[in-house]
Length: 72
Image (cartoon, rainbow, N blue to C red; front, side, top):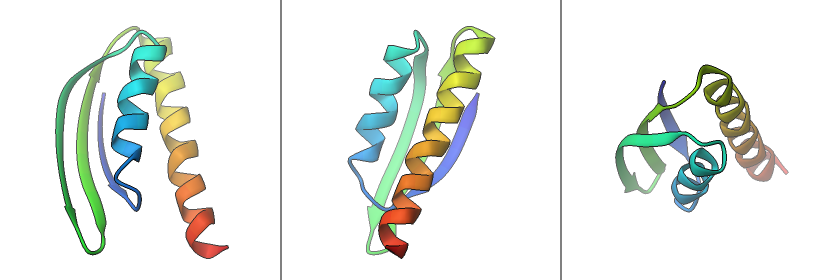
């Protein structure tokens, strides 16, 4: 599974990597760069199909939380 994300908080990169480990997935690639508009990150994960689905759902929650923080 690959994810191409724009994150407002650069610490979310570490959160996502930690989530992958918690779901028994392996992060096989991380490319991240930060600028004034946030952090652009590309992740590649490997693992059991169900774990990858759960991981993606949690990543979506992180993204939702970041959007809510900016709007609030």
